[in-house]
Amino acid sequence: MSLEALLEDGQRSAVLRVIYGHPEISLGELASFVMSDDPLAPVLRTLTIDELLQVSRTAQGGDSDPSAIDYARLGRAKKATGEDFDELAIEVLTAAGRPVAAAYLRTRLGGPRWKLQASMRRLEAAGVVRRHGQTSGTRWGLVERS
Image 1: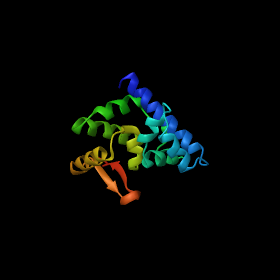
Image 2: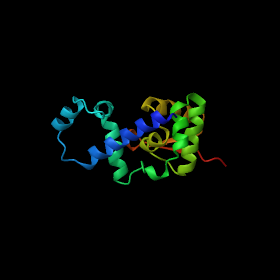
Image 3: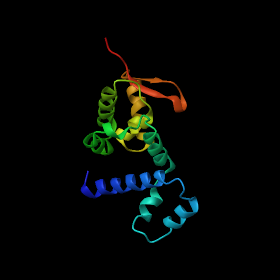
Image 4: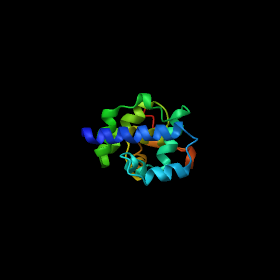
């Protein structure tokens, strides 16, 4: 990952933490800022509600604890596709040692939601991972081998 990309990711994270840390900011204030000429306005324009919710889960001690993120693996995962991405997903699940939520995986693997979903489907079909639960309660874990 290039220095420029790392800095852009850092900006996104910082903006998200500021918004989350100041719940008194109104949507009107955010809208005004988005339309301004401020250098950070383009960053704010591309943020998603899902990203803000991930910050919320992290702050509440959820599955998205950032202290255990391997940023080198995260950088590789953002570029990886197919089987290469699947191998990185297996690494994350192995390190977790327990079934984890999709938010946990996305925090450590990055990328769009569909990329993770496709990987989990491939790994489940191959008998490598097992899905536990449904919808928002879904957890993914490695199949125990004897």
